[in-house]
Amino acid sequence: MDIETLRALHKIFHAVELEPDWKIALDSLLGNLRTQFVYDNVSAYLLDRRTNGQEVVYARAVGRGKNAEADATWGESIASQVLLQDTPLLKEPGDPLPGSNRLLQAHVLGVPLYMGARLGGALVFVRFGGPTFQEEQITLASLIASWTSSLLERKALQEARTDLESIQRQMRLQDDFVSTISHELRTPLGFIKGYSTSLLREDANWDEATQKEFLTIIDEEADRLTGLIENMLESARLQSKTLQFKFQPMRLDALIRDVTVRVTTHHTGLEVNIETEGVPAILGDSVRMSQVFENLFSNAVKYAPGSRIDIALVEKDGRVRVTFNDHGQGIPEDFIPFIFERFYRVPGERSVTGTGLGLYICKQIILAHHGKIWAESVLDEGTTFVIELPSEPISKNS
Ligand code: ADP
Image (spheres, rainbow, N blue to C red):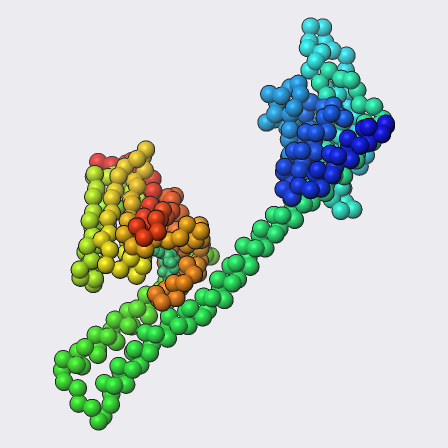
């Protein structure tokens, strides 16, 4: 190998060292390599230790046979042989049949990929129509295989780091949750204890109206406590997938109207505007579905106080779409991706009571209905929650 080739290879390997993204680095390595090492297709196979099968983790077609790009099966058999024999292997085509396209005759080279000290996979190159791979090129292919292995290890490391970050975030949220929930449980308990102690005081003589007022507060706070505990249990059941759903054909517009009546009886003065174009029925669990809208109403009342709520139902491509829109403070864009996570609360929201469970519960219920829920928000203009659910064709005319 001459000095120019060595310089060119050094340049290629150095560029790979500098690139943090494993996929871009591997693209650059195998792409730029073609100036020194000609091939048409390359695929990397890794051994899946659980199934003992092999998985294609990278495939690239650059030369002839380019339309075979998606189909990386061409290298599978040589990859398994490399994995069995733990050595580079070369497979030459037989003599071409008369009239067949010589250019499609495959010269295949497979070299082992080592992950740490263990044989972990194979890198396979193909040249259609030759020339065959020479001794020097086989050695070069083994060198490329070690770089590819370290990039694939980098990939595994990056994935492990992402998982770890998500677990760490979940643990932090769980820690916050313990302090939030103790506060949330103590507040209604404090009211219940305070007002019942007052009522029981022997030295006080409460008139009937005051007694009723105190008892109403106790009653409401006990309801709040029950709701809170139910939410916690519900979220635990949804998390462990043990919550049972009873699906039957139901009308979402009627259900939303019912929930609205209940909510507005409680929050007099709340303005709700519902627009519906007679959407078809869906297959749903009406108790759970009511819970979704109760949560959305409860959030709108908490985070967009005094705002009108606009609800619209439309049918779109065999799906029922509900938009639930308030005109409150909105949610900063950076936080929107997290609001459906369990225990997540937007930072700075401490003055408003909450546990970070409501939207998690909504999302899990909608997912169990094979639907989707997401939020769109503009700061100081408001938030729209969009729900899409498959409609139930059988009961369309019911
Ligand atoms: P909680 O209300 O108990 O904090 P949720 O899961 O219901 O938990 O909501 C998560 C977060 O999303 C809330 O902390 C709040 O910051 C934000 N949020 C939810 N609904 C709205 C809304 N309508 N307007 C503005 N922010 C909202």
